[in-house]
Image (cartoon, rainbow, N blue to C red; front, side, top):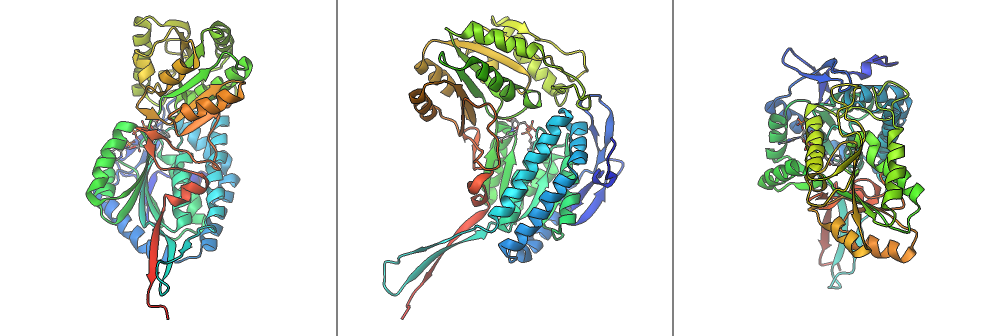
Length: 483
Ligand code: NAP
């Protein structure tokens, strides 16, 4: 890795202002493209996690008393530092996560935008006054920072998931202890170097690397942690939700998805193909809002599939540092096994492989971009989140059927559809049981809009004006006997 600021790459955890270096028993981090070892991070223990929480609690007492404008200035500075060092941050991300460098660079802009947004929102925390039922009373509602927050983030967006949680938490006046995924800790740690430079006091942020059992166990059990924000899989989210009940923590859960992508007979097919490519292949299909089930009206099925297969055939797969690469590797061997299993199962159950359907010669963790047709709702590939570069197409005959298939999942994160009919736009948007709906749009993530799901995709919103609310408690004050 060639970095203009080599000190952004830290083989250490960040415990309340102290860098704890990796010892001999650290966790190795590998480049998923090549398998090369990038370095190691320490295995932070439960007792060290307890120390970080204690120091976050101490820091909270002073940090929450700063003005919104003071916290805003620090967040703004952090945002500017991210942009200043964007190329280095993107390089670290591509090395540990595998996505093409241009995509990593775009994620840095997207991640920084959350800091910019919440720097602005930090100044806009409003309460209420309420007309009291008695003439001698005055009622007001104020909003206060929740307290020490735990954040647990996945490997697919190693920077954006961090700023999307830490940004609003700090804007509100909370302090944060974050555990990044074991595969991608270096991006979160590089952000900590810049947070220190931006002036965040010791204890306001900790990034603890290591095993989920020890760190997660303490984060969930410790009564000083008042909130957990988690992004990851639905099964892990359910476990954490149960564990949080012990100390009744506030929760935000951004869990898995199973997004339908519906192409109606009146759609602009070229726009639908462009949207499908964006929605499906970003991060090699490893995003929670990736189109998972393509539902295509029978009248335009063959035309849509032909155009899509043509676009997919032109994609270049390879190492993220090769400027020609449009698709990188999957994160690890487990991911390859899962995608292969889902494709093999679909093929055995009658799906037709138009493109791909196999490993790619670029390396051990590469799976060729794949197009399957004649998929049905009963196949595993329609029920599980694929998390890989596989388009699975099924046909439908009418709008009611498409909506019924789309909603027939326990998940409810993102859904997409393409149509040129205004009435259908409104009807179908309202009928879809999902937290996010893209109409004639395949890329829906932005810091200005509320991101989050319903049903087993979780609850709580990230980004937008609603994102800050997740880190604030409302306090009602009643003043009586006013003369
Ligand atoms: P994961 O296995 O659920 O892991 C996510 C994070 O949780 C990692 O930091 C992991 O740490 C940690 N973790 C796992 N078990 C834990 C436990 N028992 N206690 C505490 N922490 C624990 O998910 P993933 O495979 O990394 O990510 C892919 C999933 O995330 C997909 O399902 C995707 O849809 C979802 N996702 C959702 C969103 C959204 O906004 N809705 C965004 C991105 C991804 P270790 O690394 O130490 O295991």
